[in-house]
Image 1: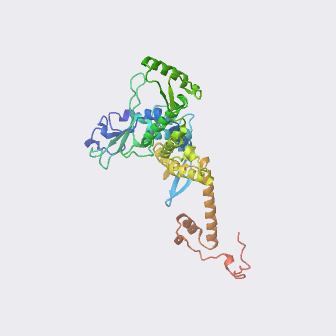
Image 2: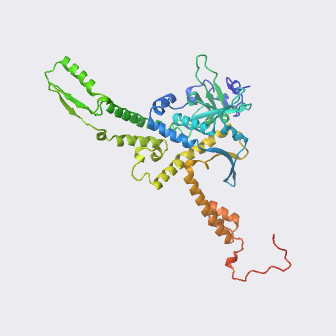
Image 3: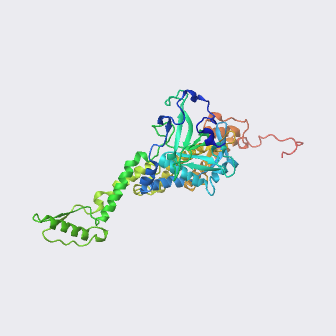
Length: 447
């Protein structure tokens, strides 16, 4: 039986205890028991992503960097993460759908999260099963458009503001296309990859788009771009005031205005010599974009949009990031480090955690990202190698001094000098010449 048949109209198949007897009805309950994305997904796509170059550039930079990672399992030993390893359960991430790649999956994940604050996905197979039941041939990951997903909530008391309120299910209900609406699908939390990197403070479980706080900045940037285009459309002048004789009649005035616009407005008419007669007087009220300080006005808005997206303006190549000492090697490397540590690595960490429910996880292991082959982080790799080299030199010094290797490793991990334990043996360089005892003649040679 497919998951939808098991859940629609009943509550079979849930692993949670049956506390809904005293709660509000799960399906068809008031809107207060569910959460949906907090913005118009389609409007954000059309008005921001597809119409604003700065939003597109910031999202593209996030996407290109985020999609570079790979994923592997790791186990914790004594509270510390162990080596990364892989198994067949990760094959679905390597090819999430026929012809797909990990990078394409991550691109979809970050794109939905940027525009809607949430990314949802589950697993399906060729037999029409999904969620836990999807174990047949062709098992793959299926993205669920975020504005078609509703988070269903429930609690023991029926009060959805209670402390024990939790996610009961995810409802996926796509709209109809030329016919009856398809059947809604209900999925358990353990069957859904829900990635919401920025929590919405007005909701308990959904995320928020980083575009929401900078909507006005996006509108202002679009207005500035339109104003700049209008500047060129109007003959590359900010404003022209034409004064005519006071005795001119309305018909003559209208005729003059029409002929004047035809001969002066538009880019093709820019910079031509202007000839007037009949008592007309022309005043130029501003004549260059520099007078409006467009670079400073629009550049500041661009930086605020990039900042909301967690990408340093130097990385995006914005005007405010391409001046002064910003491009010095040290400052550029600092911008890379800030972007990676503040934005990209936390996103990878949360993405790894969100994908665990749809994977067959080995006992005691958790999903983690592998960033060793990410070109953007090569400088970090150099720094790591330098740190490891210094740690190796420190370990050699302590072991030569007679401290036990295990205590030296513990010291390097914790920085606690009290962890060091001496073996009682000293390096030969610390003993006077000839102080070493001679081995018995009949002693067998050491291998």
